[in-house]
Image 1 (cartoon, helix red, strand yellow):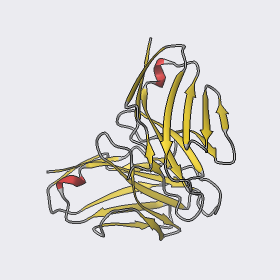
Image 2 (tube, rainbow over the protein chains, first blue to last red):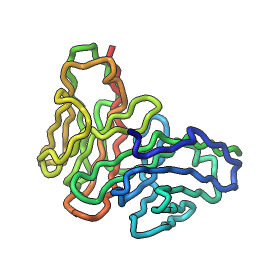
Image 3 (cartoon, rainbow over the protein chains, first blue to last red):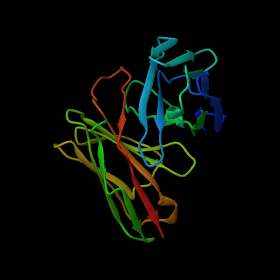
Image 4 (tube, rainbow over the protein chains, first blue to last red):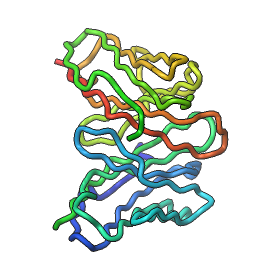
Length: 113
Length: 116
């Protein structure tokens, strides 16, 4: 039972354009969501998070949008840069008890110069 | 630079052997979580420790066990290794103790285990 889904395994975007990565979840108890970026041979690097009490959070070029009614979140990267090429994972958790993360399967983003 | 380190970086074992993986959390972080990432998949939660006590476990058998020490280091032990245990093992540290508040976990670079 995949509680967090990233349905696009890969995405290619031209440098300078917007990258939009999507994530869907099924468990309505999730109330904290995060995006991580992962380069080969490295651990996931935290990018941005959002609590369920908000619907948008921005940090520089990165913006996360949360649509609770649709159980959907997205990560927007504007403008995209070649250094953004990596695998992006979304993760969800319940902010009580065990703070375990449930991860999606990742989307490989390639930013073309 | 997250301050979370793991050792070794790579390891080759044979089926049936035992392995110990090590993690050093960021100073001040009371919670450590361990994840297994198989090829092409997202990380899967193994278990979590808070102040040296197990604080939750994922769907992994008892041959996966852990320890957390007062000096912010921790271990993941796997007994009776199976071929399917081949994966990247990640530890992540977080502050812990803030019930009801979403926590950010900071990951180490991982240990890649190959079981032959």
